[in-house]
Amino acid sequence: MQWGVAMDFGVVFQTDPPAWRVVELAKQAEEMGFGYGWTFDSHVLWQEPFVIYSQMLSATNNMVVGPMVTNPGTRDWTVTASMFATLNEMFGNRTVCGIGRGDSAMRVIGHKPRSLATLSEAMRVIKHLAEGCETTYNNTQQRLAWANNSELKILMAAYGPKALALCGSETDGFILQLADPAIAEWTIAAVRTAAEEAGRDPNSLYICVAAPAYVGDDITHQREQCRWFGGMVGNHVADLVARYGNQGIGVPQALTDYIAGREGYDYSGHGKAGHDHTDFVPDEVIDRFCLLGDTAAHLTRLRELESLGVDQFAIYLMHDQQTETLRAYGEQIIPAMAAPSPTFIPTPPMQMPPTQAT
Image (cartoon, rainbow, N blue to C red):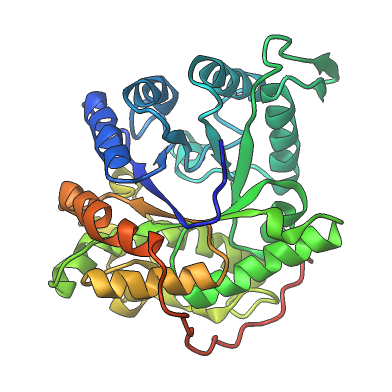
Protein backbone atom coordinates (compact mmCIF):
# COMPACT_ATOMS: atom_id res chain seq x y z
CA MET A 1 0.00 0.00 0.00
CA GLN A 2 1.50 3.33 -1.07
CA TRP A 3 0.69 6.44 0.89
CA GLY A 4 0.80 9.27 -1.64
CA VAL A 5 1.56 12.95 -1.29
CA ALA A 6 -1.71 14.17 -2.88
CA MET A 7 -4.94 13.91 -0.92
CA ASP A 8 -6.45 10.42 -1.08
CA PHE A 9 -10.19 9.80 -1.13
CA GLY A 10 -12.13 7.01 0.53
CA VAL A 11 -15.74 6.02 0.95
CA VAL A 12 -17.33 4.48 4.05
CA PHE A 13 -20.17 1.98 3.62
CA GLN A 14 -22.62 0.37 5.97
CA THR A 15 -22.80 -3.36 5.29
CA ASP A 16 -26.57 -3.44 4.91
CA PRO A 17 -28.01 -6.30 2.89
CA PRO A 18 -27.72 -7.08 0.12
CA ALA A 19 -23.97 -7.41 0.62
CA TRP A 20 -23.42 -7.41 -3.13
CA ARG A 21 -24.64 -3.79 -3.20
CA VAL A 22 -21.63 -2.81 -1.06
CA VAL A 23 -19.35 -4.69 -3.44
CA GLU A 24 -20.88 -2.94 -6.45
CA LEU A 25 -20.56 0.49 -4.81
CA ALA A 26 -16.91 -0.22 -4.00
CA LYS A 27 -16.30 -1.10 -7.65
CA GLN A 28 -18.02 2.10 -8.79
CA ALA A 29 -16.06 4.15 -6.27
CA GLU A 30 -12.71 2.86 -7.52
CA GLU A 31 -13.69 3.65 -11.11
CA MET A 32 -14.43 7.21 -9.96
CA GLY A 33 -11.06 7.70 -8.29
CA PHE A 34 -11.58 6.56 -4.71
CA GLY A 35 -8.59 4.64 -3.38
CA TYR A 36 -10.02 3.42 -0.07
CA GLY A 37 -13.16 1.44 0.74
CA TRP A 38 -14.11 1.41 4.41
CA THR A 39 -17.06 -0.09 6.28
CA PHE A 40 -18.65 0.18 9.69
CA ASP A 41 -17.94 -2.83 11.91
CA SER A 42 -20.97 -3.63 14.08
CA HIS A 43 -21.78 -7.25 13.36
CA VAL A 44 -25.25 -7.23 14.99
CA LEU A 45 -26.50 -4.01 13.42
CA TRP A 46 -25.14 -4.88 9.98
CA GLN A 47 -23.63 -7.80 8.10
CA GLU A 48 -20.16 -9.09 8.98
CA PRO A 49 -17.69 -6.88 7.08
CA PHE A 50 -14.66 -9.17 6.85
CA VAL A 51 -16.65 -11.60 4.69
CA ILE A 52 -17.52 -8.74 2.37
CA TYR A 53 -13.94 -7.39 2.22
CA SER A 54 -12.83 -10.42 0.25
CA GLN A 55 -15.40 -9.69 -2.43
CA MET A 56 -14.64 -5.94 -2.41
CA LEU A 57 -10.97 -6.71 -3.00
CA SER A 58 -11.79 -9.22 -5.73
CA ALA A 59 -14.06 -6.74 -7.54
CA THR A 60 -11.47 -3.93 -7.51
CA ASN A 61 -7.90 -3.63 -8.71
CA ASN A 62 -6.08 -1.35 -6.29
CA MET A 63 -8.58 -0.24 -3.65
CA VAL A 64 -7.44 -0.59 -0.05
CA VAL A 65 -10.19 -1.85 2.28
CA GLY A 66 -10.75 -2.06 6.01
CA PRO A 67 -13.00 -1.18 8.94
CA MET A 68 -13.83 2.30 10.16
CA VAL A 69 -13.58 1.17 12.81
CA THR A 70 -13.10 -2.21 14.43
CA ASN A 71 -12.43 -2.63 18.16
CA PRO A 72 -10.55 -4.89 20.62
CA GLY A 73 -13.67 -6.48 22.12
CA THR A 74 -15.83 -8.30 19.59
CA ARG A 75 -13.15 -10.57 18.13
CA ASP A 76 -10.11 -12.30 19.49
CA TRP A 77 -7.08 -10.25 18.45
CA THR A 78 -5.39 -13.24 16.86
CA VAL A 79 -8.48 -13.81 14.69
CA THR A 80 -8.48 -10.17 13.59
CA ALA A 81 -4.78 -10.36 12.70
CA SER A 82 -5.22 -13.60 10.79
CA MET A 83 -8.10 -12.17 8.76
CA PHE A 84 -6.04 -9.16 7.71
CA ALA A 85 -2.98 -11.28 6.91
CA THR A 86 -5.08 -13.73 4.88
CA LEU A 87 -6.64 -10.95 2.82
CA ASN A 88 -3.18 -9.47 2.25
CA GLU A 89 -1.85 -12.81 1.05
CA MET A 90 -4.79 -13.17 -1.33
CA PHE A 91 -4.84 -9.62 -2.71
CA GLY A 92 -1.40 -8.11 -2.13
CA ASN A 93 -1.33 -5.94 1.00
CA ARG A 94 -4.49 -4.00 0.24
CA THR A 95 -5.94 -3.81 3.74
CA VAL A 96 -5.86 -1.15 6.45
CA CYS A 97 -7.04 -1.42 10.05
CA GLY A 98 -9.05 1.43 11.49
CA ILE A 99 -9.62 0.79 15.18
CA GLY A 100 -11.00 2.42 18.31
CA ARG A 101 -12.30 1.56 21.77
CA GLY A 102 -15.65 0.42 20.40
CA ASP A 103 -19.04 2.14 20.36
CA SER A 104 -22.01 0.55 18.62
CA ALA A 105 -20.44 -2.90 18.23
CA MET A 106 -19.77 -3.13 21.96
CA ARG A 107 -22.74 -1.31 23.44
CA VAL A 108 -25.35 -3.15 21.37
CA ILE A 109 -24.23 -6.46 22.89
CA GLY A 110 -24.16 -5.07 26.42
CA HIS A 111 -20.48 -4.24 26.82
CA LYS A 112 -18.71 -0.98 27.50
CA PRO A 113 -16.00 0.31 25.15
CA ARG A 114 -12.59 -1.12 25.98
CA SER A 115 -10.01 0.89 27.88
CA LEU A 116 -7.16 2.68 26.13
CA ALA A 117 -4.73 0.29 27.81
CA THR A 118 -6.54 -2.67 26.25
CA LEU A 119 -6.67 -0.90 22.90
CA SER A 120 -2.93 -0.26 23.04
CA GLU A 121 -2.17 -3.92 23.72
CA ALA A 122 -4.60 -5.07 21.02
CA MET A 123 -3.04 -2.81 18.39
CA ARG A 124 0.41 -4.19 19.19
CA VAL A 125 -0.74 -7.80 18.94
CA ILE A 126 -2.76 -7.30 15.76
CA LYS A 127 -0.02 -5.40 13.93
CA HIS A 128 2.79 -7.74 14.96
CA LEU A 129 0.88 -10.90 14.05
CA ALA A 130 -0.55 -9.49 10.81
CA GLU A 131 3.00 -8.63 9.70
CA GLY A 132 4.42 -12.05 10.55
CA CYS A 133 6.25 -10.96 13.70
CA GLU A 134 6.37 -12.82 16.99
CA THR A 135 4.46 -11.25 19.86
CA THR A 136 3.27 -11.99 23.35
CA TYR A 137 -0.42 -12.76 23.65
CA ASN A 138 -2.20 -14.18 26.72
CA ASN A 139 1.19 -15.05 28.26
CA THR A 140 2.14 -17.09 25.20
CA GLN A 141 4.43 -16.41 22.26
CA GLN A 142 2.56 -16.33 18.99
CA ARG A 143 3.48 -15.83 15.34
CA LEU A 144 1.72 -16.27 12.01
CA ALA A 145 4.62 -17.98 10.28
CA TRP A 146 2.92 -17.80 6.90
CA ALA A 147 2.44 -14.00 7.06
CA ASN A 148 6.02 -12.88 6.42
CA ASN A 149 5.09 -10.70 3.44
CA SER A 150 2.02 -9.11 4.97
CA GLU A 151 1.91 -5.39 5.82
CA LEU A 152 -0.79 -3.72 7.90
CA LYS A 153 -1.12 -0.04 8.76
CA ILE A 154 -3.16 0.70 11.89
CA LEU A 155 -5.06 3.98 12.09
CA MET A 156 -6.72 4.88 15.38
CA ALA A 157 -9.93 6.86 15.81
CA ALA A 158 -9.74 9.37 18.67
CA TYR A 159 -11.22 12.57 20.08
CA GLY A 160 -10.03 13.08 23.67
CA PRO A 161 -6.58 14.02 25.00
CA LYS A 162 -5.52 10.59 26.24
CA ALA A 163 -6.69 8.83 23.09
CA LEU A 164 -4.96 11.39 20.88
CA ALA A 165 -1.74 10.90 22.85
CA LEU A 166 -1.94 7.12 22.40
CA CYS A 167 -2.63 7.54 18.70
CA GLY A 168 0.38 9.78 18.19
CA SER A 169 2.78 7.68 20.21
CA GLU A 170 1.92 4.19 18.94
CA THR A 171 -0.01 4.05 15.65
CA ASP A 172 0.55 4.55 11.93
CA GLY A 173 -2.13 7.20 11.64
CA PHE A 174 -5.13 9.07 12.97
CA ILE A 175 -8.82 8.97 12.03
CA LEU A 176 -10.92 12.01 12.90
CA GLN A 177 -14.60 11.32 12.40
CA LEU A 178 -15.74 14.87 11.62
CA ALA A 179 -14.64 17.55 9.18
CA ASP A 180 -14.57 20.71 11.32
CA PRO A 181 -11.29 22.45 10.38
CA ALA A 182 -10.84 23.99 13.85
CA ILE A 183 -11.22 20.65 15.62
CA ALA A 184 -9.09 18.98 12.94
CA GLU A 185 -6.32 21.49 13.56
CA TRP A 186 -6.45 20.91 17.33
CA THR A 187 -6.55 17.10 17.16
CA ILE A 188 -3.86 16.81 14.46
CA ALA A 189 -1.57 19.05 16.50
CA ALA A 190 -2.17 16.91 19.59
CA VAL A 191 -1.41 13.69 17.71
CA ARG A 192 1.76 15.09 16.17
CA THR A 193 2.95 16.49 19.50
CA ALA A 194 2.52 13.07 21.08
CA ALA A 195 4.46 11.47 18.23
CA GLU A 196 7.32 13.92 18.64
CA GLU A 197 7.41 13.40 22.40
CA ALA A 198 7.63 9.65 21.77
CA GLY A 199 10.66 10.16 19.52
CA ARG A 200 8.74 9.55 16.31
CA ASP A 201 8.53 11.60 13.14
CA PRO A 202 5.21 13.47 13.52
CA ASN A 203 4.95 13.95 9.77
CA SER A 204 5.03 10.21 9.17
CA LEU A 205 1.52 9.79 10.59
CA TYR A 206 -1.25 9.34 8.04
CA ILE A 207 -4.20 11.63 8.78
CA CYS A 208 -7.69 10.61 7.67
CA VAL A 209 -10.77 12.79 8.13
CA ALA A 210 -14.10 11.01 7.66
CA ALA A 211 -17.49 12.70 7.45
CA PRO A 212 -20.72 12.70 5.45
CA ALA A 213 -20.50 14.54 2.13
CA TYR A 214 -23.53 15.54 0.07
CA VAL A 215 -23.21 17.59 -3.12
CA GLY A 216 -26.19 19.75 -4.05
CA ASP A 217 -28.05 23.01 -3.58
CA ASP A 218 -30.80 22.12 -1.07
CA ILE A 219 -28.92 22.72 2.19
CA THR A 220 -32.01 22.13 4.34
CA HIS A 221 -32.51 18.65 2.88
CA GLN A 222 -28.80 17.86 3.07
CA ARG A 223 -28.73 18.76 6.75
CA GLU A 224 -31.66 16.48 7.52
CA GLN A 225 -30.00 13.63 5.63
CA CYS A 226 -26.75 14.07 7.58
CA ARG A 227 -28.05 15.01 11.06
CA TRP A 228 -27.51 11.42 12.16
CA PHE A 229 -23.78 12.06 12.08
CA GLY A 230 -23.94 14.60 14.89
CA GLY A 231 -25.76 12.00 16.95
CA MET A 232 -23.13 9.36 16.25
CA VAL A 233 -20.27 11.70 17.15
CA GLY A 234 -22.29 12.73 20.20
CA ASN A 235 -21.87 9.24 21.67
CA HIS A 236 -18.12 9.75 21.84
CA VAL A 237 -18.47 13.35 22.99
CA ALA A 238 -20.75 12.24 25.83
CA ASP A 239 -17.97 9.94 27.03
CA LEU A 240 -15.54 12.88 26.96
CA VAL A 241 -17.92 15.11 28.91
CA ALA A 242 -18.42 12.39 31.50
CA ARG A 243 -14.65 12.14 31.90
CA TYR A 244 -13.53 15.76 31.59
CA GLY A 245 -16.65 17.89 32.07
CA ASN A 246 -18.10 20.42 29.65
CA GLN A 247 -15.03 22.60 30.01
CA GLY A 248 -12.53 19.90 30.85
CA ILE A 249 -8.82 20.38 30.36
CA GLY A 250 -7.83 19.62 26.81
CA VAL A 251 -11.36 19.26 25.40
CA PRO A 252 -12.53 22.18 23.22
CA GLN A 253 -16.04 23.49 23.79
CA ALA A 254 -16.46 23.53 20.01
CA LEU A 255 -16.64 19.74 20.35
CA THR A 256 -18.61 19.36 23.58
CA ASP A 257 -21.19 22.14 23.86
CA TYR A 258 -23.67 20.84 21.31
CA ILE A 259 -24.65 17.70 23.24
CA ALA A 260 -26.29 19.68 26.06
CA GLY A 261 -29.73 18.63 24.79
CA ARG A 262 -28.83 14.99 24.18
CA GLU A 263 -31.22 12.52 25.82
CA GLY A 264 -29.95 9.00 25.27
CA TYR A 265 -29.44 7.21 21.98
CA ASP A 266 -31.13 4.38 20.08
CA TYR A 267 -28.59 2.25 18.24
CA SER A 268 -31.26 0.76 16.00
CA GLY A 269 -31.04 4.00 14.03
CA HIS A 270 -27.25 4.28 14.19
CA GLY A 271 -25.84 5.87 11.04
CA LYS A 272 -29.24 6.25 9.39
CA ALA A 273 -30.79 9.38 7.91
CA GLY A 274 -33.89 10.44 9.83
CA HIS A 275 -32.72 8.95 13.15
CA ASP A 276 -35.19 10.11 15.85
CA HIS A 277 -32.53 10.57 18.54
CA THR A 278 -30.57 13.25 16.70
CA ASP A 279 -32.98 16.19 16.94
CA PHE A 280 -30.68 17.81 19.50
CA VAL A 281 -27.99 18.35 16.85
CA PRO A 282 -28.12 21.98 15.62
CA ASP A 283 -27.69 22.99 12.00
CA GLU A 284 -24.45 24.82 12.83
CA VAL A 285 -22.85 21.56 13.99
CA ILE A 286 -23.92 19.70 10.87
CA ASP A 287 -22.43 22.46 8.74
CA ARG A 288 -19.13 22.22 10.65
CA PHE A 289 -18.92 18.44 10.91
CA CYS A 290 -20.05 17.54 7.37
CA LEU A 291 -19.35 18.67 3.80
CA LEU A 292 -22.52 20.12 2.30
CA GLY A 293 -23.40 22.47 -0.53
CA ASP A 294 -22.24 22.73 -4.11
CA THR A 295 -18.96 21.59 -5.62
CA ALA A 296 -17.22 24.87 -4.81
CA ALA A 297 -18.14 24.56 -1.14
CA HIS A 298 -16.70 21.04 -0.99
CA LEU A 299 -13.48 22.12 -2.65
CA THR A 300 -13.06 25.04 -0.27
CA ARG A 301 -13.39 22.78 2.79
CA LEU A 302 -11.20 20.06 1.33
CA ARG A 303 -8.41 22.50 0.55
CA GLU A 304 -8.62 23.85 4.07
CA LEU A 305 -8.32 20.34 5.49
CA GLU A 306 -5.45 19.61 3.11
CA SER A 307 -3.64 22.72 4.35
CA LEU A 308 -3.88 21.29 7.89
CA GLY A 309 -2.09 18.10 6.82
CA VAL A 310 -5.03 15.81 6.09
CA ASP A 311 -3.93 12.94 3.82
CA GLN A 312 -7.33 11.39 3.13
CA PHE A 313 -10.94 12.47 3.12
CA ALA A 314 -13.37 9.56 3.46
CA ILE A 315 -17.06 10.07 2.69
CA TYR A 316 -19.72 8.55 4.91
CA LEU A 317 -22.21 7.56 2.22
CA MET A 318 -25.36 7.22 4.34
CA HIS A 319 -27.94 9.43 2.63
CA ASP A 320 -30.36 9.40 -0.30
CA GLN A 321 -27.89 10.46 -3.01
CA GLN A 322 -25.17 7.81 -2.82
CA THR A 323 -24.50 7.29 -6.51
CA GLU A 324 -24.91 10.99 -7.29
CA THR A 325 -22.37 11.93 -4.61
CA LEU A 326 -19.85 9.37 -5.86
CA ARG A 327 -20.29 10.70 -9.38
CA ALA A 328 -19.91 14.34 -8.32
CA TYR A 329 -16.68 13.53 -6.52
CA GLY A 330 -15.38 11.32 -9.30
CA GLU A 331 -16.15 13.73 -12.14
CA GLN A 332 -15.52 17.10 -10.49
CA ILE A 333 -14.04 17.15 -7.01
CA ILE A 334 -11.31 14.50 -7.07
CA PRO A 335 -9.87 15.76 -10.41
CA ALA A 336 -9.96 19.34 -9.10
CA MET A 337 -8.11 18.34 -5.94
CA ALA A 338 -5.46 16.54 -8.00
CA ALA A 339 -4.83 19.62 -10.17
CA PRO A 340 -2.56 22.46 -9.07
CA SER A 341 -4.54 25.12 -7.22
CA PRO A 342 -3.88 28.65 -5.97
CA THR A 343 -2.30 28.90 -2.54
CA PHE A 344 -5.03 28.35 0.02
CA ILE A 345 -5.27 30.87 2.84
CA PRO A 346 -7.23 29.35 5.73
CA THR A 347 -9.49 31.36 7.97
CA PRO A 348 -8.04 32.27 11.41
CA PRO A 349 -8.24 29.25 13.76
CA MET A 350 -10.55 29.09 16.74
CA GLN A 351 -8.93 29.38 20.14
CA MET A 352 -8.60 25.91 21.65
CA PRO A 353 -7.53 24.89 25.14
CA PRO A 354 -4.14 23.28 25.66
CA THR A 355 -4.07 19.52 25.26
CA GLN A 356 -2.97 17.51 28.27
CA ALA A 357 -2.90 13.74 28.45
CA THR A 358 -3.90 13.65 32.11
